[in-house]
Image (cartoon, rainbow, N blue to C red; front, side):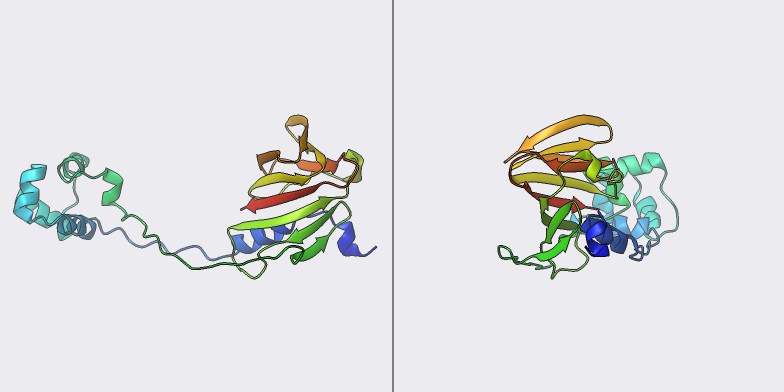
Length: 211
């Protein structure tokens, strides 16, 4: 048996590591005045009209928009009430939802095999890179708790759905639980966990890991 078959790791562990290696987004400097002006313009208000709505002097609003003065918390409350917005909206515009158009179809039994000594994984959607989720099917070869050298734990959260057969799901902080076809469990993957087949045939499950 090859070394690859001896290592009981989730394919999701590799994905989590790759995602953690990505560069952090650059934090843009806060431009409260510009943000206020954008909100006012989007509402179609003049400085005079915004002044009447908020109770703040026109000159004060102008100075805030031109970054000449910083508004007090009381002024921000008046702005939020008068412009009918939440205070956090003054600091950051809502994120725009942009469709990426990404799609990857995996036909039955055409996933990428990734066998270990306790699982026989079939990785799904392997053509997509930098995924936020890692879906894969697994046939559970392990039959007893002792088949594992230690708890399995890794970054992220995980969802498990039993497709066929029956398993016992072991987790570090809970009693073992039996899961049959159609049963599912969502759990913190940093918590130690492992599973074994207890049905006559090896159980088949769907796993989705998000990091």
